[in-house]
Image (cartoon, rainbow, N blue to C red):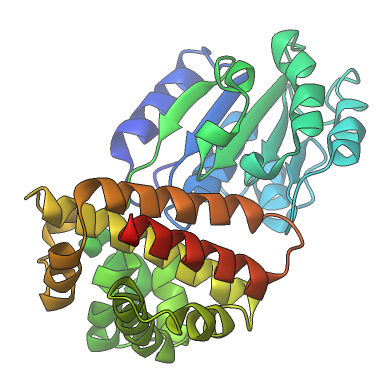
Length: 323
């Protein structure tokens, strides 16, 4: 797993478990999107299943099949909306059969927090009474959404955002963007390679963020018409809506840090826009607004009317501000 950028402590601990034959039956990798959780899970799988002398060798049949997504004893479960009980039951039906190629069958559940409660309960028995040859790796941005009984049966590793230099190194290696272009997205990417790539490929998104913050500031100052203009602006596209929601949650977190006199993550300096929001918001109101945005995040997992839900969210935010 030496190809992984960052997360050195987690890397060392997982490598040590493989070397000491002390692998757990279930892991939970948590952290924001785009920081290497899935890459670590796949390389961990390769290290366990590799048939070469120095795992992961990248050259043996197992490593090559994993890279191509066709290794018979590695399954990745995911969904763009939510992971339903039928998907989990289908996976569980194969667990009693021993692996076809190696000594382990590895199941990676991507964005595990999108599992319905029924799907989580269905998975629980397999975590409580695991076969020795099955290994689960759950990936999520929001571990608190998972059932406590699921979390308690996993070894939990929290992945911190990558450092700006680490993100830059990956982008320089894997893209053709210039150093100047890359440097402009490092701060707003907040340690996520995925977000940095998105910003590099959507140069207009930074301008859009500035416009959104301008309208949101006016809303908090009492311009109720912004409820509707913001809602319409944020509901034209679901992926854009999700990206902007993530940005707003991070934004109010930064405003909260500024309000309390703490430094921003990765040494980033607070700007005039941060200061403007700090002046018109109280600590408890910032926390309440972020709770409202997290509630919107939960609703986003389902097939909702985006415009209506954003309107409800902004109405709640203005109530918090006025209260």
